[in-house]
Structure formats: C-alpha cells, structure tokens
Length: 428
Image 1 (tube, rainbow, N blue to C red):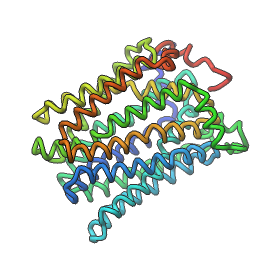
Image 2: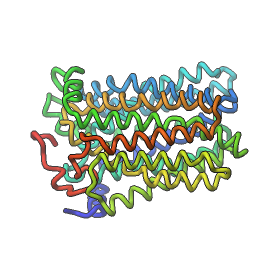
Image 3: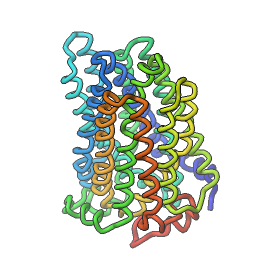
Image 4: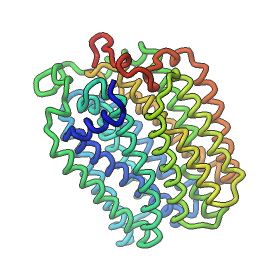
C-alpha cells in the first residue's frame, strides 16, 4: 500500500484534482473572510449577538432547504455548469452587500435576504464537491483525497479569519466583503478549466453525456432509510452541528464584551482553531488507527465539547487560542472519517441525492444551534452559553461511541486502505 506522502504526490500530479482542490480552497477562504466580516458588521450595526445568529442562521436554513434539490440536479448532470454558476452568483451577492451599504440602502432585513439567497446557492458547491470528488481519483486514493481536501477548509480557517479580522480592522467589514466577492469569482475560472467529462466520472454510465434517466428523490430516500450506518452517521453529525452552533454568535460577543478586544483578536482565535485542525490532520494521516467509526467520531465530539466548553473559565484571549488550538487538533479526523465512510456506503449514481439529503439533515443542527446560541448568549451570557454547548457535545459524543451501527468499518478510520476500497455490490 503506498504511503500517504506518495499518494499525495500522485494526487498533486493529477491536474483536474489540483485545479479542483485549489478552487475549493479559495471558495472556503472567501467563506471564512465573509463570516468574520459579517459577524463583526452585524454586531456593530445591531449591537446584538442574536442578530448575528439570525443572519448566519438564515444562510444555513436556506442551505438546508436547497441541499436535496442541489443533489438531485447533480445526479441529473451538468455538474460543471452548476459549480461555476454557484461561485459566480454568490460572488455577485457578496459584492452587493458593501455596495448597498455605501449607498445607504442596506438594512438588516435586506442583509438577511442577500445571505439567504447565498445560502440557497451554496449547496451546489458543498453537496456537489462531495458527490464529484470520487470521480477525480482512483478508489484506493479516496481516503487520502478526502484528507487532502480537508486542508481546503483547514487552510481557510487558519488564514481566512486572521486576514478577515485584520482587513475588517483596516478597511472595515464592507471593504472586506468586496475582497471576499473576488475570492468567489476566481474559483469559477479554475473549475471551467477542468473537462466536463471528469466531473461525470462513472456516473456517465447511467445515461448519455452524464444525464441520468429516471432520477427521482424517492430512490435516494429509500437507500438512506435502508442503510442504518448512514442514518446513524447523519444523526451524529446533526447533533454535533447543533452543539457547535452556539460558538458562532457567542465567540464574537465574548471577544468584545468579556475580553474587551477587537476583530483582529476574533480572527486570531479562529486561526488558532485552523492551526489545530491542520496539525491534527497531519498526525491522523501519519499514524492511522484501527478504531471503529463510533469510537473515533464520538471521541472527537467529546473532546471538542471539553475544549470549547472550557472557554467558560478563560479570562484572556491567548488562553482562548490555546483551547481552540486543542479543539482543532482533536476535531480534525471527523470530516475525513465521516465523509470517506459516507462515500463508500453510497453508490455513484445516488451520491448527489443521498449527499443532498444527508447534508440537509446534518446542517439542520447548525442554524438551530446558532439561533439557540444567540438567544442564550443574550439571556444567560456568553460564557454560560459556551459551557452548556460543551456539555451537550460531550453527552452526544458518549452516545455516539456506544452506537452499534458505527462499530463495523474500522477501515474508514485509517485502517487497511486496500481492504476498505474493496468494491461492495460493484460500487466504486
């Protein structure tokens, strides 16, 4: 079996994968820039952590609603066009925010509308990327490709918040949003350089030109409900997202109100989390373990709850950065393990619909967690909100570790990759 480093060299020599990875990284970098700028901008305009939860929550609510439709469209075909459309349209929407603000036309309700429209488009990339990634690599490279692709998010979390916080302090949140808009347009050019047939992969077998015949939502639901490990994995991620949600509105308010610091500090805190995830991914791929998914995923959730809940006792941003670094260190394997397991469970011609469905269900927890967290921060205080969210996360992690449906496929957690890639029912 080739080493992780050797597989990465092969992947980086794969031009379509390299272009796809670069586009995804720029996409996530733009997302992180906008998230810091939007949180600070909303806090300045409304002086309410609940308003932050409302803006971000509506973005995620519309993403949840649109995810099944995005998956259906990807199974129908035209994957390349859908990905390019998402990046161009979202870039234009983000550019409207500063333009409307500078002309005194931007109100809080209009900001929510613009973010809701961006949320409707976002699943074209989130669901689409999960669906098409296996078409860019060989089956025995899938886990490494997922680990490598997680660097898109991790590098964005490392660089994006710090740059976003610095830009917000230097040129203001509206100017930062304009920079962010450009970071959505550029990936569209990279995605356009990849041949359309690469996006289709083996799904082309379902119909000419990559168009599936007789595609229906019901088929995706039937497969999902008939696969207990997939249901268990989706519910675990939903609850994890719910427990994570309060951190988004509570952390900016904690920085400003409790620590008396500015957006630069907020950016550095998120970057500390990003550094932790990069280090954690490197360690995970270097020393793969033969743990069952239940133990890995549940342990990650419990550790995340301990470290983020520990912010309750922190009185200085530097100590907060240490805790978030440790949280990132332990959370890194989650997406690699969960996504690889999901891709192996779902046959290629169903990935769009099933991933659209699972993404929608998983993401329900995030806006709910943000909205509940914003309300809790306004009523119970920022510190208590983070502590209670941490306790919930630990409890859910312990329950996941006891799940009987996620204890079978140890290979998804970094065991023998060759065994994990053995086709099941001729699926790739």
